Length: 322
View 1 (cartoon, rainbow, N blue to C red):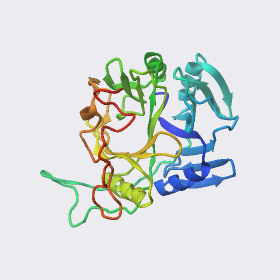
View 2: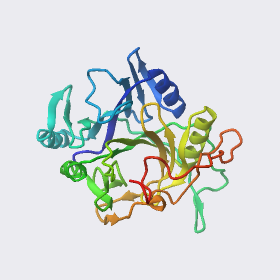
View 3: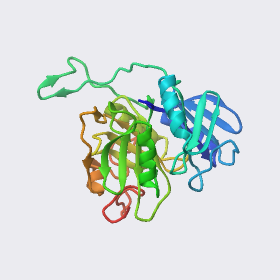
View 4: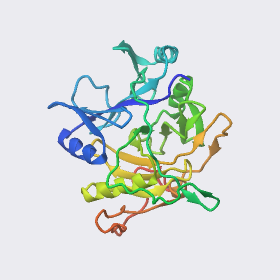
């Protein structure tokens, strides 16, 4: 194992004020603030940074406007960091600074690796009562009036350099969990772990950029409570809640002032080395087993009114569009 997850993501944005308001409502903790920078963190200390998009310290953007500019991956040991260093040296823009190694991946995204700074946490998550197992007795299921993301779970990029980018992450020990043959790779950082930490997606039009950054929540009740809180605050749902058939995760997507989308998710598949990657044909039913168009209104607790022309979520895989 060389990488064990995401340690920090950094965005270059047009409007720090909007990002401050959005991500406070989203449930992140603001730990530092200046006129030019916002530093948030999740419950386990995974860092989420925002900088002005013209900040010269940021890696070059792979698309115009506000977007994700850098992903710092977690290494659990110096031996793991050495593996990252050896792989990064073969990439462009390699450098070392402050106990972190940096480079640019074949997709043009600035990345780094460092010894993990995340904290180990234990969260009380809801047990479920199924037909043959009573996991919750004499206790109602929880209710959340907002969400507090536990960590940054995964990132998803559009790439015109699919095979080269997949091969690069494979050198770091990433495993292919599932595939869209010739179109995309769901990859987890090690044999044992959640379904994917990065998803690389090639579209027919050669799109290049960020699709979304996903934040892990403790259970599906927190996804629902967090989503309705965001609705009450006036933020726009892209799609959700819903369920992914590929990873089994429950999701809720929002339009983000930091660029593209952000996702709440929970209950993804946990895999081991015994898992055999599957092939899927991209399409709306592969993306979502079910999903609520327009989201849920936080006040009425009912489905929000979707526009008459509502269709598949913009930017995701459909049968007719990449």
